[in-house]
Every structure is written in C-alpha cells, then in structure tokens.
Image 1: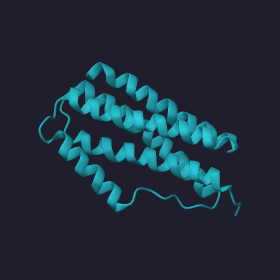
Image 2: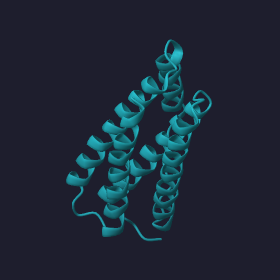
Image 3: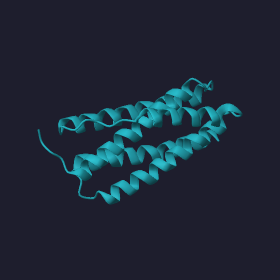
Image 4: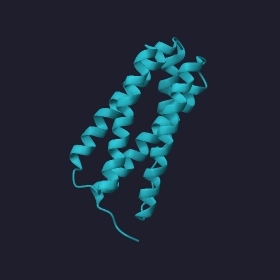
Length: 146
C-alpha cells in the first residue's frame, strides 16, 4: 500500500466529511420539504455531494487510508440543529437560508483547506476545487428560494 502525505489525507478526509454532512442534512430536509421545485434542487445537491463523497472515499481507499466519516455526535448535532431550526419555521425561504449558511461555511473551509494544502496531489486538489465550486453553486441556486 502506498502512503500518502498527511496534508493530502487531511484534505481528502475534509472533502469526505463535508460531502457526507451535505448528504445527511439534505436527507433530513427531504423529509420536511414539500415544495416540488425546492425538493428537486435539494435532490440535485444531494446527488453532487454523493458523487464527491464516493470519489473521496475511493481516493482514500486507493491510498490505503480508511475514510473517517461523521461520528455519531456530529450526526446527532446536525439532526438537532435542523429540528430546532425548522421547528417554528418550515418555510422554503427559511430552509434555503439555513442551507445557504451551511454552504457558505463550506465555501470558507474549502478555500482555507485549498490554500493550506497547495502541495496536495493534483487529483486531490481538483476534487477539493469541485467541492468548493459545488458549495458556491449551491448558494447561488438557493437564492431564488429566499
């Protein structure tokens, strides 16, 4: 098995966890959202997160590293935040706002990781850039639901 640099592994683990968080969040929201157009947007985002997550997992595994997904606490925290955030307001506008906040955090963190890990393998950097662009695109797509 080939060893990969720690920075490269950290970058891939970030991509894996971030995309997994997108999947977990959207899966929960799909149980709440009734608006057809908004559901379609969420399903599109979920599909993209799923592809990125699978690719990150494959790259980690190819390099002899096990993916470190979200732990139980992180998942429970996510569920509780969504439940609390939608308890009083399940409107499309409010949920779009919540999603935009999460995607903006993803934009910031992905950019920080890209800059910190400039020497990562090109394939890894490309996946990180894809995640970054996905987060930016999600914000743009969600604006019409505000």
